[in-house]
Amino acid sequence: MAGGERFRDTVAVVVGGASGIGAAVVVQLVAEGCTAVYIADIDGVSASAVAVSNPRAHYAEVDVRDAGAVDSFFADVLAAEGRIDIVVHAAGVDDPRAKAAMHEAREAGAPLDIFRTLDHDQWSRVMRINLDGTFHVLQAAVRAMHPARSGAIVVIGSSAAFDTLAGYGHYAASKAGVHALAQSVAKEVAGLGIRVNVIAPGPVDTPMAARTPDSVRKQMAASGAIGYASAEELAANILFLASPASSNVVGAVLLSNGGRFTV
Ligand SMILES: NC(=O)c1ccc[n+]([C@@H]2O[C@H](COP(=O)([O-])OP(=O)(O)OC[C@H]3O[C@@H](n4cnc5c(N)ncnc54)[C@H](O)[C@@H]3O)[C@@H](O)[C@H]2O)c1
Image 1 (cartoon, rainbow, N blue to C red):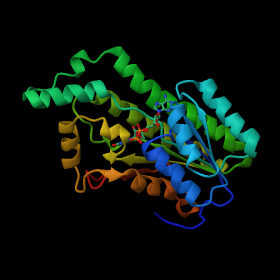
Image 2: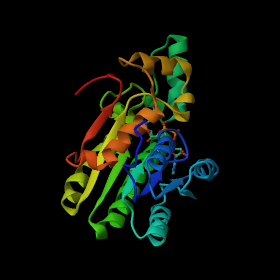
Image 3: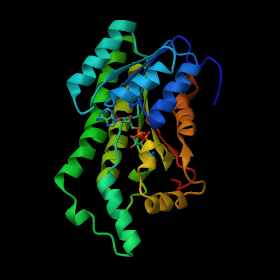
């Protein structure tokens, strides 16, 4: 991890900061001098634990599906701090049911048959949290940064949007939507001094990955040149995109996937 004070005198928001990649971002932002780091997460208990163990970190229980709740969280941070310099949006979900079906098919040596029976609840859960949630967070972040005409926003997409897994199209679609939305917004707000970028991880060892059935994990690990990354490696990439060192990087989708594929 890079040391120093890159984020001295900055106020950051980390949505999804209670676990995995988001929690690693909180730790690194605090270590690099952030004045305050505000965590928003649906899991208030874990968010509180991360806030307690990191100085200058605060938390609120927020569901990114709820636009009003996201807006009022950003309003509370603005009221407390007067500005928001960095927003990292790391909240998202996978689909354990689809992953379990992949695992069962692999164990049985049977062909995949997931899409045919994918139900609307599976589709809409992933779309509402991953894509609607990104819309809500991006809009709130841009609104919060607009008066100061400065800020950096990083959202987490996925390599799965490019290298789609069979049986997992709904997750891939949600992340492809995240990439396209963030890239369009990036072009629109660059002239306002706000930079938006995307990080697209390959497999990362987080609590989300730990819930992935073993045979699917092995398939994912074997798909890249390196295998699973750590949450800290991804956080370091995200801090680069949030820092002035990436001032000319706008609307990028930065692949951090250990060589799973290249574009
Ligand atoms: N782990 C991987 O292999 C991997 C690969 C590619 C992309 N990603 C993406 O990275 C991001 C972070 O994933 P992670 O692996 O750290 O997972 P994680 O499960 O450890 O963390 C995700 C966080 O999002 C929060 N969250 C979930 N639904 C929410 C909601 N409705 N409102 C607010 N918060 C909510 C969770 O409570 C959790 O704290 C996700 O967008 C995920 O899709 C992960």
